[in-house]
Length: 391
Image 1 (cartoon, one colour):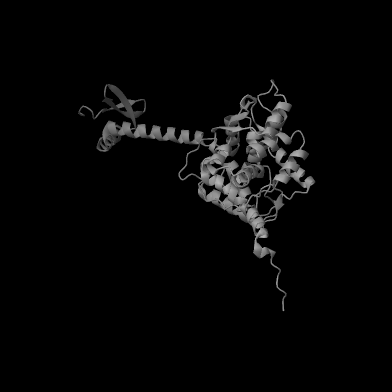
Image 2 (spheres, one colour; image 1 turned 60 degrees about the vertical axis):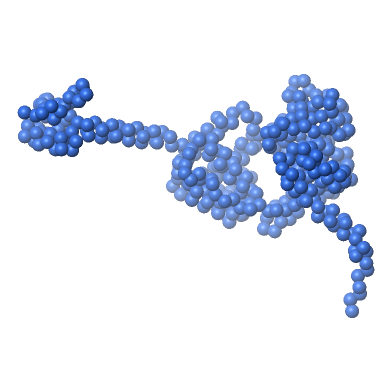
């Protein structure tokens, strides 16, 4: 006779079961035996192993493990699913189509590299994989050169950083948490070529020669110190003609900023009526920048070329010329001439351009200081002395 809680052997059909009552519930547990003596022996082993409580605990753990395995399988994100997640996250944000296309092109190359190593979903991406891809870009270039990267040459540090930024953006769109984060690796150091400034005479020539599409951007960057995106995407509501001031949220820092208009900037807005049908001050320029972010940069570079103004330099180890005087150099020129020629106090200039720290404003001036030093040295008495004749 078995005691309470130890259960009883019951024959159901051709098999024997152990019937046990626990917490008001009856359980018929299969013994897998076809004879009563064998079933009794199984019952004793069952009780010795912990009885019904151990059985139910093991069953619950098995169910939980199966659910975890199912959840882990469902949580796996394929490389193509990651792209869909990226599109869903950024829908309606107005990202430039070319920017999106470039990110996806870089993602395809990275995932092709991952697949060649037997990795086919996001959870398989590790710092070991990203470090290996970084070494590939640094030494040989893209895994599958195509599109904008048709060459199989080593990529520059700035290009590598841009590629990794795009890859990381698509990866993060799926909200995958891994430890350590796969993209937390050291990036190559960028070339520290100094950005040069434009002289006042060059600025006058550039503004005079710029067409209707380029002139507003050039004026806003050169005469108000705006960044390219802030100038191209300036909202109609940001133009306060009454107070002769521009008030907007800076795209880079997401901070409110205001800057007074110079006479030329004021004349620009008075001569170009603001369209009530568009939120942008210059709708055509905004649409151009949204669709092809490099369009204004390329137009500006071509303008400098027509004017005979040097804007690029060759850097050892790089295959393409490096731009040292692009549209952003107009902002540098605004800071430099304001500090050096206009004698505007640095703290005031920091406020005019919206720098978060004084060191950044000082860096803008220091980057162009070599030009001032060279001009000063030409006027130095020692530079006026005749060179001695060689014996």
